[in-house]
Length: 258
Image 1 (tube, rainbow, N blue to C red):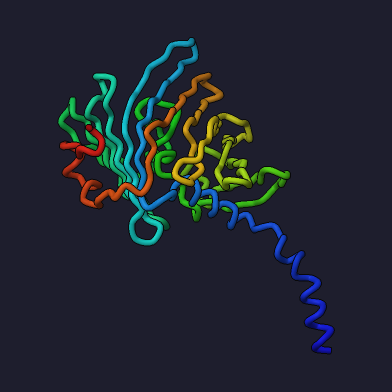
Image 2: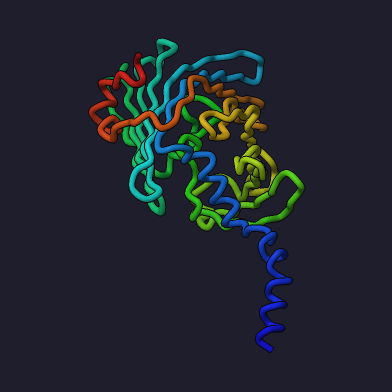
């Protein structure tokens, strides 16, 4: 009986090895691929905001990211252009399983503003991206369901555990199997109508890490969209944690000004 039992398991093993990962495992992989490449990272970003009438505005900024204890992270964003946002700075201390700490420095007002947890799903500097898009949404905030699988992608439906804390009813994300990167997210309102889309338009491999180098956020109701183009992307550059403190909101480090 033992021999037959072992033979059965050996025959079954290939099928077990090829079993599809769970929705939670897929989302965890996507989160790691999108936000945790390397020990730290740096990029320059050119943001173009398109209004419903074809007009445009631009923002240029640099972003630093550092992985810290566990899966917590720290982000620092420094704005360079145009003049109305120049020297603005945005700091995030991301706490997995808890509320993030977020600060915004407004030099024109000589004001350091604390961003409340409830404001994380509001416009990031007047664009179609949200503050939450910068550092990502907590995996524990949603229930994840695998609804479709193709040869190249997984489609995951995400439903918030606390529906009163967000403006959407649910959202779905297409995740690329080859890179584990999320390539498109669509958000549905309380009436089930699609109103927002975020997509990865271009992906390149940089230092061995698949990296989104062009991302688009669209407000489908307002008819606006924002395009972020990333350049000078680097990983594992040895960033120090002291850079991600409130003192550097007023005085930016040379890592973002040089």
